[in-house]
Length: 344
Ligand SMILES: [Zn+2]
Image (tube, rainbow, N blue to C red; front, side, top):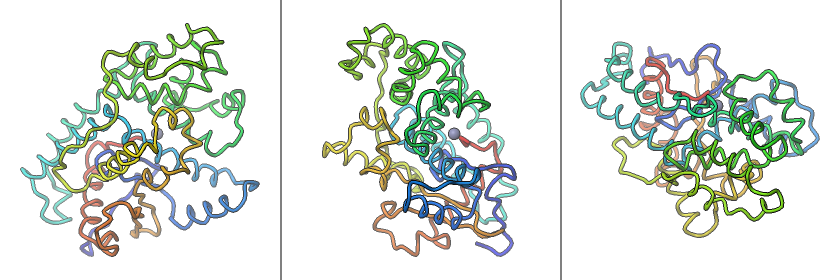
């Protein structure tokens, strides 16, 4: 990194987000804040956290869950691929030769292409829902259920009070069709299943309606895969890997590791997504941990890269001073200069 380059790692008011192309999560707190807090909570269940401490833990869970959503859904992963391929092609036509060169980098046509691809997340379907509403409501559900043990449906309603529509609308729709208790139980699975198809919103509403029509006494025997094929004629399932054009796709490494777990019958996505808050600490914990960039000091950042990423790559080269980590921060910088493809 040249001495004049000051990476602006987060937007001034941003708490956190996932970068869709690199798969890197950025957290607007120091790594020591997070890791010391995490250690404290792992040692004991009975710790009273301050509001901002709880928010920090929930935020890392929320963003990590977005990463899991993409790695387990062909619909979302294909979007990442389109963004990634657009960037790759653009980089060939407009190479970035130095870090300083970034400021004047030709961005306009790329920005338009990104907007074109990501617009699918904001197209409203039945009940006024968009794919983004479902994506965000599922991540919000996850952060609350993972950190607030023994949460009840009524307590969850309280947690949602005052939150933005992206975090609440999809769950509200599920409650209006299924009632509060059933919605609380099936929401994470139906949200996940909807992204295993080409039409998430239609699928999500269809799953809720079809399940509501099943007699209560028979609901425990429902075959959810069968239900999905009845509701959606376009089941896409899990991501299929394609040769990357730039070697920065952390997603691919995770998807490859997940494929190995499926092949060994150690992972059933229907089981995991029915109660993701119970499974994040199991065999998934290493596989689905994203790389995270923390803000340590002004102008000083830390990239935590899990060991399973680039396992054959020397450890020191995974450090920020390594060429790949430099490329990673470089690409992230592009997004700060563009429209920011992030899910907050
Ligand atoms: Zn989010």
